[in-house]
Image (cartoon, rainbow, N blue to C red; front, side):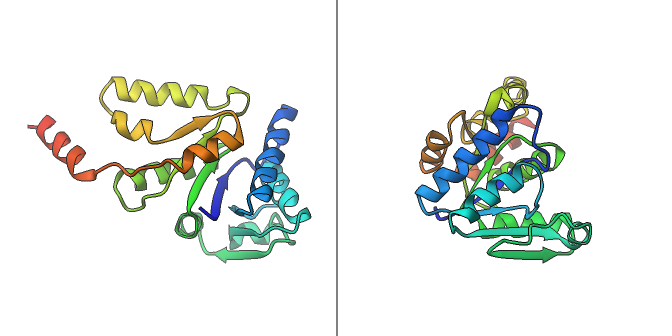
Length: 196
């Protein structure tokens, strides 16, 4: 794993711990010579991550649709800024160029991005790990929703368990290294049997 994509908020959040943990994640990347791939913004937690990496002379690649670049929210100091046409294209490029994914707290954009990775992994379109950095218990309710999906038969247990969740950046990244893709043929066969 060399390039890790981080999905996170364009806002700072209400608690200082969100900024603190974003800095800690960037510092872990710096220490382990990892490249940050992210949404390219110069605001919110995205800015904190990028600035911390850049101040240490590390590589930061941003991907942003041109309408947001035109709104002047793009970070001008990145190693590379890739400008695309649409939000969908942004996700496609982020996913294609990254080896793994981490979600920090964020809003609908973060939720959209992590859901896209979960679905693509489930369908074996990609085979890349995803982890949630559960700062300040931010993802507790999302985890509860997913567990309910497992309980009610809408989310397969093995797919849920293949997503890593932890409160500490170092532990989470180490867990990402243990990722093993789930065999698709078996669960497709299972859902066909269930539908008879």
